[in-house]
Length: 136
DNA sequence: GCCAACGTTGGC
DNA sequence: GCCAACGTTGGC
Image (cartoon, rainbow, N blue to C red):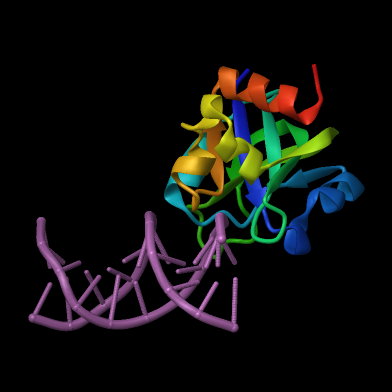
């Protein structure tokens, strides 16, 4: 199973919103690179939930529940979304500062390309963030 | 709130 | 097909 990272502004759609909603579409993505990553996702893939802008930390883990399907919030049919559900919060959220300070995470897309809202995470990065977050 | 970085659009 | 202008994202 592959790993991913999803960004959202906490005021717009944060971790608590996802927890309250249960299974939710990850809609509103209007970037080709991000869309293509969503097309690559499989049911059972896991992803980090990152709070951008005013959070700047990874707060939880979610699971992909449905593969890419048309995004009903788009005017045309070129955009897709996947369905995700909150799995569990990180006991200790992992901040962007902590990620930048960790040499093992220096190649994370989060660090390299701050504007990409859906991005892949390598198995090594995944394990490292889990450790820093107080899991495993 | 500002603005750098990035992506997209559209005139040529 | 180039690139200037514009819009958006997201760290600061």
